[in-house]
Image (spheres, one colour):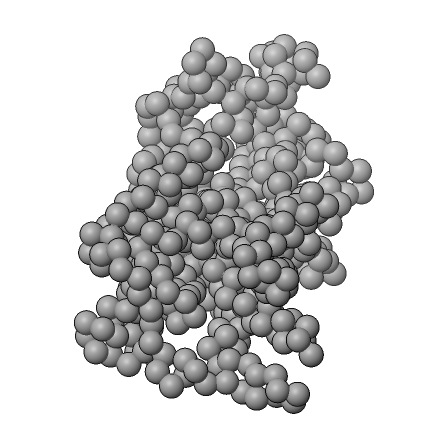
Length: 288
Length: 237
């Protein structure tokens, strides 16, 4: 029974990691941009919700929606004004610029919000759980997190495969030069993709802040989980990213079961093993 | 006049791809371009579509100066192009490839262009393959998809770059018919082609280019028979 509990916790944790990773996967898939500031943007998303709750006194759902809108605008502007200029044949400029952005974000948040650890208070939901047979219980927050991840993936798949915008995303991802000759404005498509990724980042920030404490400097350590989930799952596949998140979540909860100090380490070990056996991940879609 | 090119120049270092090119194309015309490899034929297309910027000179479409206009805006003005080496969006279906071109080339919603996309796929013989990923197509089908996509942007001026190369005779005949049909419906065509018999079956005017310069133009038979073309172009074949 204890194993069943561990499995459930691990899978649900995977939902959170998938949310961390989906924005990263989306951005890499469309414009081959590795965003090293992704983790810090996630923390920015969490702080955006916190500001809504603490400073403006809004209820969490409303604060989250506003944070999502804020992050959408941040993402669009960031891509349109800054990151589009770094894209090209050379992969180094976007890495350097997003690395610099990561440092700026960390210090900017440190200056604004201080180094205090914060937490988003979900109210009664925080401790609520659903009881199952045999004394098993599922926490409401992890469950809602997992369901959110699935909803986000369903939305992304619908967007990508059933809408004009999604086709433009895929066309640009496939061949940006040709896409331009079809009348597609790559700069705007990239900006829209980043804006979308930042909305997912805001959702991830919300649940990150609800599940555990966060502070302005914690972004990079969360970014590692996002990278691991994306790479385990295989680049470019959203369901693969969820699977990657779940595998990482399971590895961590089982590791913690053996020895609480092994939680993070066992996740990394499983990641390394998969990287050795299947360097392209378990469900790769993007090639070349 | 649909297309007016005035004194167009472009160099890559020492290589001249456009040397004082001046060219007029009338509405509804079908113009052929021949010339040896590296003569600047495809570069001329790149200049017209806006992928390449000229060092000097002017390009106008229907009297509007488009010399500095970005490539994507020229698409909605009515310049369509198919590539010598087909470059479909490999991970998308044939229908999606064509639909993307139709939506964004015309600034239209998908439901408004759907019937047109089907008609174009029918016209180019791709309808049976509509739901296959473009990456799985044969060479002929890829070439047809190139044409379908450029047609989907609803061009007034269609630039075709060596689409007959590598095809069998029967395939080539089919292609000629398709291009004639397109021209008959009022679309102006400029066609670069090494397969001269295919070209001559369609075009009413022929232009020969070498070292980025127009060396002969006019009646196709006369251009083919002219001494410069015999020397420079056919001598190399």
